Image 1 (cartoon, rainbow, N blue to C red):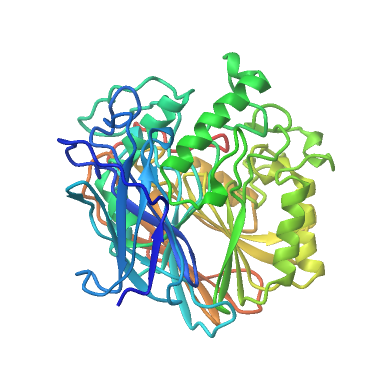
Image 2: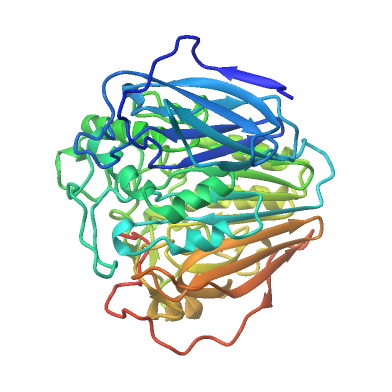
Length: 531
């Protein structure tokens, strides 16, 4: 039975003859609500065509879509069409409404005679409805040149409701250091304009494991720095000696980067960028069980203190009360949402490490200023408010570091007697940094200097989270190598947070591996700048 339909345009535009396969970049869905999702695809028969247009002509193309309750599309509930235009690289983002809550659906697209792969998506439970369990995975940092995206093969096989991506979906620079037997595809050294960013997304989205994970689950997506430039901050380009250090030119670069981001992700019209601005902080409720809040720690922040984000040993500017990583409006929005939410678990999707990360195991102090350590006032405001207002069950999920951490968060890190109010689980990279290793010099320094750090691991992989009304369980899923495909996955350690009890405890951990990584020459110890 057809229960709904959607149409972006009543006028139809035929697909070119001899188009080839226009669905080389796969399909995706995202931003689930109780009654809908957004779908995505981009027509690109030649995804790495040098002009950045994916082998498409100037003409618009009508793309039909349908969504069904069954994989065979015998019970179709929505049919519609959207017009793919050259202005948005022939991408489409139809928003589907009128669906049943907490239900799986299947979807596909058609352009001319070509039919896309089938995707699967799920709506959220109705707000406030009794929700017994939820499973999701999160990932970050997928540099094409450093290794294969094997982690997504394993993620696709998981029993999940959702995937969260915390940033560094692409890397603006063309590094090739980790793929055995591979050479860099014909891309410029660094993306600066719309063509360059489109090429970066096309390169990454051509990877079969990533396409499979997008097709298997709905995604929630935010950004970090490499979607634009390493360590960028507000209108500042980060560490750069090119002309883009000029704010006006950097805003032009941001405009290109944000448009390419929107063109390649399952984002709603609310996320369509307006020049150099894009709305990426938003929240989603899942019954009475969880609320996931996605942050934007790049667009509104002050420039990094004492340099460009590297580790520093003496930096009083970190404590400047006027310095911000969130911006006042986003900070107020975050605090109001956390303190008014009725959900059992508050999940905060965050880009850079919130926990204090001292790299000096001795009496000194060495901290990176690109993370929340460089914005102490905002961190104190957030965690202090959580303590004062009695916000329970705050779990922060973080990317960026290319390492796995489990760390408790205190209301004031300058006082080790201040209460633990939340826990941060930092997930490693999909590929960035190369193969990695279980323990490293960086890990040993961090463990020695930070008493709230409960776990460290430096392998590649992703993090799996299971929530119920009593427990949040976090499993660190790791791979032994990424320099070649086919790596197996194992659970390196599991940690739990119990309802109403701040802080985490270890649930399970095997004996650490004793073998060295397969390619020890690849740098794995990314310090906070993560270049």
